[in-house]
Image 1 (cartoon, rainbow, N blue to C red):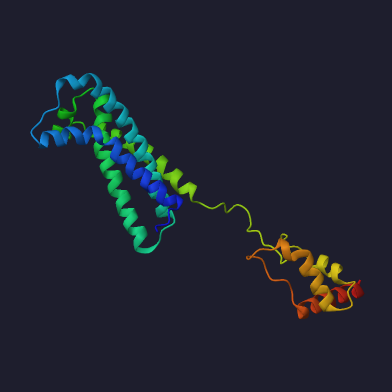
Image 2: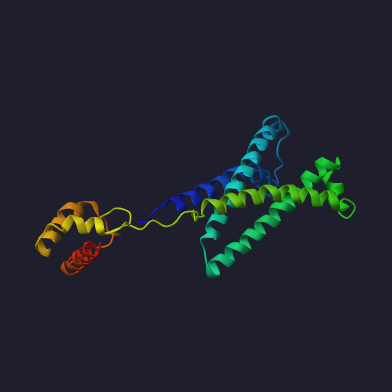
Length: 223
């Protein structure tokens, strides 16, 4: 049985969402492929629906870019190279699709004329590409930041007792009253055994307990 972790679920949701928001593009294309044109009577509801789905496509693509960059940030070797290649192709196609629309809106020029005379409107197209990439890079930065560990603080280290690492003289004081190291070990197991987990250091053995007691006696005698 396939194990569904959160990454798999997110990937499947993105894939399904992409298929759904692309329906307004695929339906007319497939209808024309079968020799059927879209009825004119559909325009009253088709255009508003298409606008909603296109808005959904923008959201899905933004989430997809962030997700892919999160995965790339944690990948290595050939997997990282493949993801980086796909990211580059995704950004190129994303810019090629949206930049002409942005340039057309700014320059008040029909897209057909803009594409046929791209050299004449090169600066407008360049600016439109920058607008598209600014959004893409923002989404990518969020995806990377999501997977970045906080390195501002030091990594906490824990003692075998379950507390943050501290001076073991505290434990030395606890076991100082026991004449037998075996009795001291049993005491430590009873007191701290239930609070420990698998990642913590093991409770000291008899030799280590004897060493702690010896070091504590030496320290006290030197004061």
